[in-house]
Image 1 (spheres, rainbow, N blue to C red):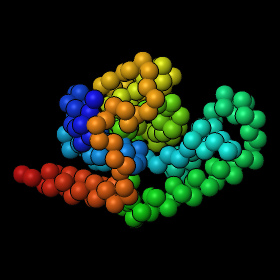
Image 2: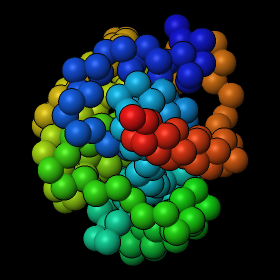
Image 3: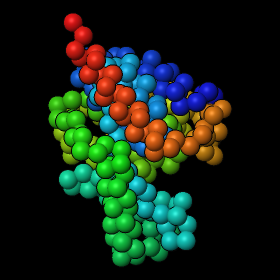
Image 4: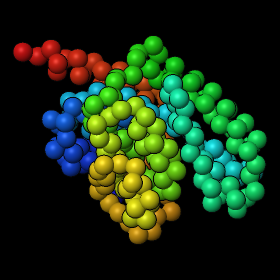
Length: 221
């Protein structure tokens, strides 16, 4: 049980110390992954950015993931073929929802980052952080998108995720670091005493604070 996302981030950071010399970049999944990623980035003295992923919900069941899209110069679409077949979801629905979610991704990137350029990942260690994983559809999309950005290694780091989900994600990352692996979980929030929703304002503040803090560290004699 984690006290909150800050606690989870600090505990996760303690398991990632071996990456401090691997030229890391921390990429958090908004919104809940940002407070976790902030603590990891501070511990590793690494840049912090967001990787924006949006779920494509099934018709009439928006919480059921039929796929996910990830932003970037070449947006990545990951399909959940099992759900698509089971619910008979047609290609027009997927295409329409993907376009809608990509528009929301663009809105959020402007809100969170403004004109600030994303750090280059080429040849570096990309550490993808979230506050936990249930099904893994959005995380799988994120890891596949990262592969196109040329990092030397992809590391998935989360406080909690079930082993079956981690097994499905294993081919997408060179390393996975997880603190708790419950055999059964209904939701990520059940492993936090305080799982209050992370608001946009907090995301913006943490990204700004991380950039300022890193700049101060880099300029110390």
